[in-house]
Figure 1 (cartoon, helix red, strand yellow):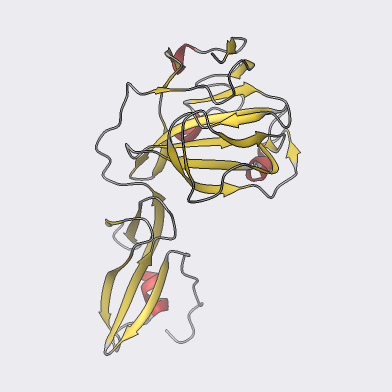
Figure 2: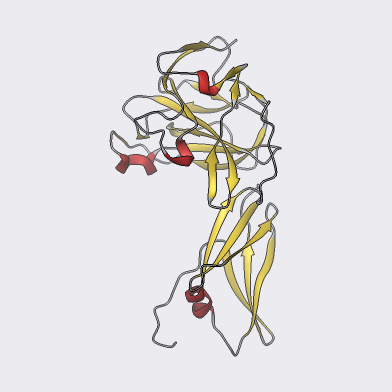
Length: 252
């Protein structure tokens, strides 16, 4: 294997030689649980390894004389996902607060299964709320800030700009996550590791990423075998599936 291409391990995988063994170690850098899916590239068989926040654990072990790290990466694909899997259940009756401040009025510009961008399992059950640049976004539910991406200041009307949408992700007590997208550059009011309460200001609305107008893209997700998928929720006693483009909402 000396002439094989050197492969790069994902961030959550590292190798350690201990005595005569090669250890494959997974490190969870998140403040939420995560799970690692290991896929045999030849047979397509997979196994799952659950990690607690910040946990590090050995997931594979070999005789060091029989295999090296590059061969392990050639043999297996390693995928890391947010949350706990298998997913048990979540609180389908939880009432989320609208993600803006009391008295704020917003227009729904795209509902569930919207034709513009709410397609596919990750985005289908999301909502877009019209918000001006710099307006305050609040947490829709108690949670812990898991991820903040806030450096971008670029916007466009094609899918090429998707990765430039600043966002914040929260982890909730029932193993679900919520995400707030298109935030203002450096407009976060909370940081990774912060515990936040529903209605607490967490970010400023912006005009970043794939969008035709300033707005907040909001979704709630559950873990699956292939990552997070969006789920329907109740917002201020209104089932999200009832909210349609053109509806006007006022936060009470």
